[in-house]
Length: 95
Image (cartoon, rainbow, N blue to C red; front, side, top):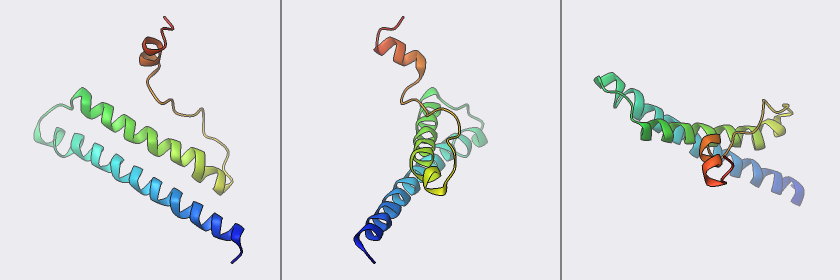
């Protein structure tokens, strides 16, 4: 195996680990909403929704930025923003 192939292998494993961590975070956040809250008769909290959104966005970013190009797939829409547009307007004083 030459150096270039070694680097590709390292990259695949690194992205795989990142995507696996993101998958676990999505699973945990959605489990907290469904099983721990809704199935027990409760309503999800804004914090639970925020955590789930952040986990989903991270997984989506990893998939679109690293996995899809390696698979030869075209981008699927615009990149996911790092924060909600409303919050960005407040932070950057765009209103």
